Amino acid sequence: MSFNILVIDSDPAVQQLLAHNLGQAGYAVQSHGDAMTALAALQGTLPEAVLLEWDLPGQSGLSLIRQLRAAPRSSELPLLMLSARCAEQDKVLALESGADDFICKPFGPRETIARLHAVLRRRRPAAMPGTLQVAGLRLDPHTLSVTAGDRQLNLGRVEFRLLNYLMHHPGRVHSRAQLLDQVWGTHVYLDERTVDAHVGRLRHALQPSGLHDAIQTVRGSGYRFHAEMPAPC
Image (cartoon, rainbow, N blue to C red; front, side):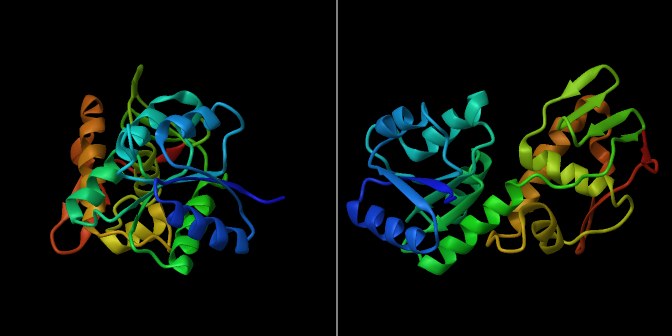
């Protein structure tokens, strides 16, 4: 059965190009030119992923991403931003707003399909080790929750995956490139400074636990999780 992909772009030529190339790759594509009609379509069966333009009429793609992430039903929906706004600050803003990847216009069909494959692969359920507990910090990969004592910490999806990976490799120093490969996927083309932004958000989320300093910066090398050795529960 084909994966269903929703394309939201105001340019009919881009819609046709994506429909053709994604169709050739085996995807079933539905296209809309604005956020309002796309939201109406999303009230039905959710697609496997959404590719959406930043500069949409009425409501911007950036605003739409935030709206979809805030809704429980679509909070985990894979979202790939398409835009000619390719400055670093634009990419970081889109990713921090909830985009899973950022594709610059004009884009190549092969790169677009590779990025889509990577996002879908990361979203597939993976076998994960058991619960970890470190100095009162408890991470449960099955419920995607992190708690400190009786308090549940509010981590984003990427921050959870980042913490999960670091906690399973305590004391080991990971370069930004290694973290991109392990947390984001090997076929994701992101600036390494994206890691810095998410490490900052992870530290902020960990402050109530008092373990924000456990995410250490190793100058010139990368990051590591340095705390008591984790023990399976």
